[in-house]
Image 1 (tube, protein in one colour):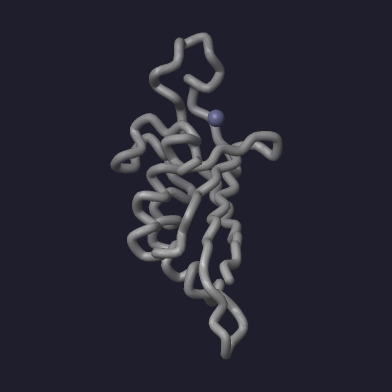
Image 2: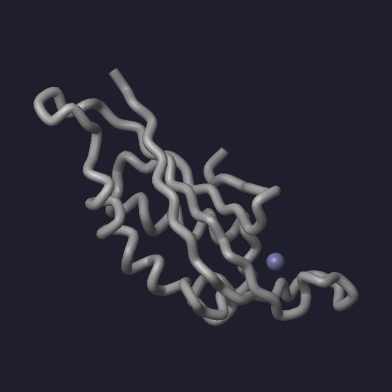
Length: 119
Ligand SMILES: [Zn+2]
């Protein structure tokens, strides 16, 4: 029987979106409190009664979170155009190596918006 787990992280980061026209506000340097939500799918450990220790996910994500928290995202290798869509893919591509049960990374740049990769 499969379970779906979610774990939330929050980072504070600055960015600008270089491919937008200069009159667009997101082309200027600005900051977001990004919420990052991981979705994992896995089987229940029948003895412990859980799928995975949330602390293990936290430990595996910490090096990645450190790379992007309180940073200018444009200065991070691979995030030269740090849209939320590309940030979600950047995180998924790296995190799935260490967290095989990872199915999706969602990035919410405001409380009203959220995008996920892969769909
Ligand atoms: Zn923005």
